[in-house]
Amino acid sequence: MAKPRSAAGATPRFAETSAGRMQETVTQNLLELETHFSFGENWAQYARKIDERRIEEAEKSLVRLVGREAIQGRTFLDIGCGSGLFSVAALRLGCQRLLAVDLDPRCVETTRGMLQFHAARARWECRCVSVFELDPANVGTFDVVYSWGVLHHTGAMHKAIGVASKLVASGGLLALGLYGKTPFCGLWRIEKRIYSRAAGWVQTAIRGAYLSLFRLRLALKGESFRKHRENYYQQRGMDLYHDMHDWLGGYPYESISPREAVRYLRELGFEPVRSFVYPCIGLLGAGCDEYCFTKPLPKSSSAALLAGASGLKVV
Ligand SMILES: C[S@@+](CC[C@H](N)C(=O)[O-])C[C@H]1O[C@@H](n2cnc3c(N)ncnc32)[C@H](O)[C@@H]1O
Image (tube, rainbow, N blue to C red):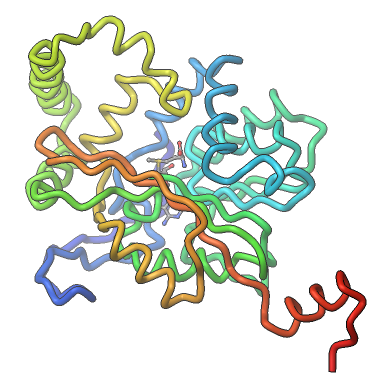
């Protein structure tokens, strides 16, 4: 794991959320890697498993959420690129120019390696920056802004969604994967805080206990663990054991209900296009709900487009 950029203390405190509820928040410099779970090592290891069939699954998942035409010939920003799998998938789907960013230098290194190997001739760039450092004045705006499983790990999810939304071009799309809210979110936040700071052997013990519960649940449902593990790549090209480590340690951690997500994005001027939500109790964790929003064209340009199509003069 690459050395963190600098040390910063993380002090838990309680604050009122926009929904008026008291929630633990973390006082931290949001640009500091030190206060975040070390995603980099996990993604670097996982990247060694990336093969053609995982890339195909990643492409399928992008097509389902964003749409093939929305990617082909368009600009694409991948915020929190992790292993780089979805950057590769976007380029393979024909995106015209790609910028991939991640807070973690190890993820940036892994993504660069993936892009050099799978898309050497395409137009791409990969930078080590936090979402909070992205400014349309410096990086421009993009036809597609994709941030899956990232913004709830930043320590300030609403602020991060706001920053990402500003990077979407008019008429463009914002695709997000965000943890759904469950009754067990508070407990998981505590577990993740402990796990992300624990020694390796403690993490192994927690993973072992979690894996036993996970296997028990599958057995009670009459499902085979072996089949589940083997077919796991069908979930966005992912791998069960790496996802488990990511779930147990992904801290900071926030979550959002579909209703709140749509309401907040509407406040930011976006309209929902499609979503895939997975309600659950959350006892063994929660999955990411997926959203695709559009930033409508300004009224004047929509009128001009309509007039252009119909031959009418805009006055
Ligand atoms: C769960 S992983 C998701 C990776 C990838 N988007 C995917 O779908 O496989 C979360 C990623 O977000 C990155 N991340 C966390 N906080 C970030 C921030 N403030 N700015 C940019 N990336 C961040 C982590 O380093 C990690 O690579």
